[in-house]
Image (tube, rainbow, N blue to C red; front, side):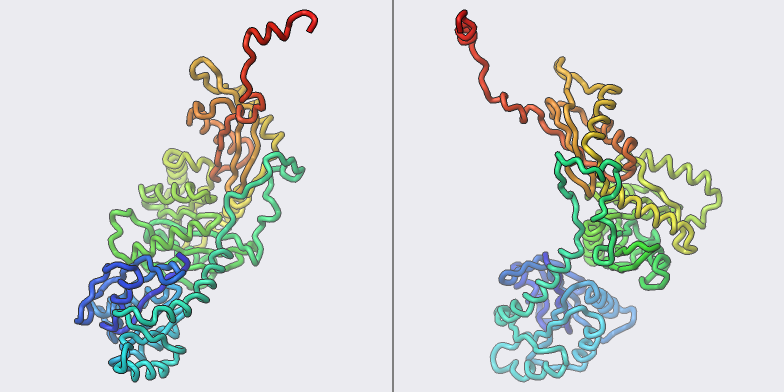
Length: 491
């Protein structure tokens, strides 16, 4: 999906009808009475050569109280801020109403891109409303008939340049991961195990950091404290943040892009469609990040959902920093810290050695240590180790703890090299790789972490059959008669 498109407008202007046509199914309820749609409905849309996500919204009404209509309006306004493009639909047969003019002003202030569509414009009945739509000041309107499928070609042509813009933006923001390197190279500057200079953060390529965690852990408050201003909405209620917000900022001399994400609850508890959309947006933020800060609540750390979130970041191959927030509320800090470290080692063995930083988003305590941990985790994530050092290490590891011998034939680890960075990936050529136990792989991974100072970062280990490199493997052995003839005297 290249972008998201929200269908907005007054009740009964044909938003759900157009939604069903774009997704190719009757997913949304359609009726002549206004106000049928009350929640956000998301679908995979297809229009010509474009593939995108379309969101059907509740009809916008001029109500701002806590009634059902007021809550529906606030939900739609939140969706307007979340999506890439808003398709503002009016009823061409009814003409422009005062409510249309109010909502056009809202879209001008809040939406990123707005396309005006005059629906129900088929025939002469909609001609007057179509011409009147120009008065809204939102550019040239598209003449549509969602019920009959008219005007979709024109909408397609208007969306193409926007889709290209969002595609370029996505490619520019997405970090390079699983970068392949020459397995046979022996660069002198890789022997020290330092970060490759090409991956140092710059203004054009800032270090991308996503802050994730359960609702009400203090993610928005933490980012506000880091940047020194109240850019993000905060409060005591859980789940205030809906969409992933990207904030460029230079922190401690390091150019960064900080992603604030919606709180992630257990999947079984997520029933609201907007919350599902928000969580999906947060998951996309993890894929855009290079370093993921898993924020825990000091009062209830390492809940099941915290462990799932941390495991998600590790499986995505991102460098991980664990931060424990609300540390200012703890009385016995030393005992609590020992308890946290023990729980971390016990519950997240796949992130053994990852930094655990105690912070207070309210007071700003511990933010310097959090910055240093993020920068170090990024450097380790880009680390390269020379082939000669790796093979010396491999010999020492196998002598200290030899590989098993299934069926009486010991597995031989012959050669090792680094094949990837971001995160580090290593190739070991060995005999019978399918028989090497997972426990021995963990032994090697933990040894890599300790010997080459790579705590916490995901490490990928690839086993290859060394016999595949044997040029004589496919040749048949000579028979006894052939050997006897070859060794006959005089030959």
